[in-house]
Length: 65
Image (cartoon, rainbow, N blue to C red):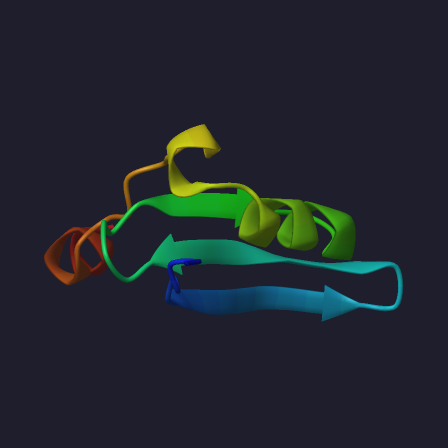
């Protein structure tokens, strides 16, 4: 049986030549950036253990910058 996975996809930039943003795993909190529709699809298609992770700054860290 296939396990369902949940993600939050944040698109920061959408232009005629592509998109950019991050995919966050709801289960693990891992965040993976993408810079094109192809990278987004590849990120969503990979099993969670195969993704490279980038820690996401907390809300407090974002306000300090």
